[in-house]
Amino acid sequence: MTQSTRKVALLLILSWSLSLQVSFAEEADWNFINREIDYVMKIWPGDFDNQEQISNDQNAAAGQTQGQGRFHAVVTPIENSDLGSRALYLEISMDGDLKKLYQQRVLILTPNESGKAIRAASYALKKAGDYLGAGHEPEKLSQLNLRDLSLLKGCDILLHRDNDSFYGENNPETCKSLEQGASVKRSIRVSPEIFSFNDVLTANKSSEIISSTVMPRQMRRARWFACMIDVPKKTPNKSDHTQHYIKIHDQGGTYPFTHPDGRAMTLLMRNTWSYGMQRETFFIGVLDGDVNGKTLVYSWGMPGSDRIGVNPGFVRIQCDLDQPGILELQQGLRPDS
Image (cartoon, rainbow, N blue to C red; front, top):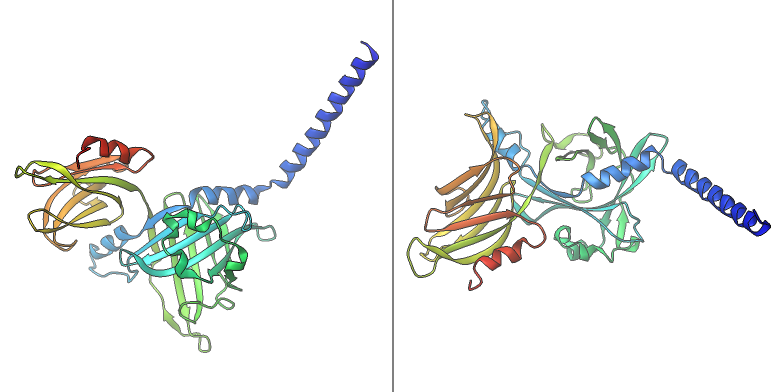
């Protein structure tokens, strides 16, 4: 081996050794809690709704509801270097109306090494109205900076691993509700399919509970579907014209529309419980008027199905799991609509 060859070989060995040391250093820095944060960032984003919890309460043998109320949550990652790569936008709405706001927050996740937990720091948005609905329009969040937020001091939640979920709560002695102005204890649980929360409000001086629920709001992960609603154009009971292309979620999502015959109707999508067969059922139905009206037609399928539809003649509805390209495929079925 020539002297120049030995020098090249020595340089290669030295370079490999240095890169190995850097790799080991990075691996040592990438500890367990950091891995847990990345896992939470993977499983938490999405839509969640407690429609089935409300329905199950109403159908309980005791015939009494637990007072949770209907809630829908949207959790969206914020891709912004100023906030870091572990920031989430949280928007919670009520009563099945995505515009009826319960709470807006930005959560930033960091390691809490001493407690072997994930710290979720809570921030309010200074111009909250500008970001209403941003959970479904993430480009609105792309310009968020720390100067746009106000830290809610004392409201950090420490999340601990609990089997396949994470559970945590804040300190009620230091956290004050921005919306109600009272001390609040918020507890949350996050898993791949469930996001639940509970708020207990107490008067600041007397510590008297002024608002609470018996059970947490257990919101199940919702899937969004792209649907086409076809109606007759010329021939009665032959639905050959697409009146609407819509998006609807499967945890109690609704879409009201007016049929060409003048009747008001509502499309409803659920994952309800079939007591007779003791199993969950994916359901779609068209109701007369609103969701409290008589069922005009319905169909059902397996939980987790990526498509469902119904065609009684006076209306034809086709719903496919919303994913890139599906709308173009649907529109290609009736290009004249």
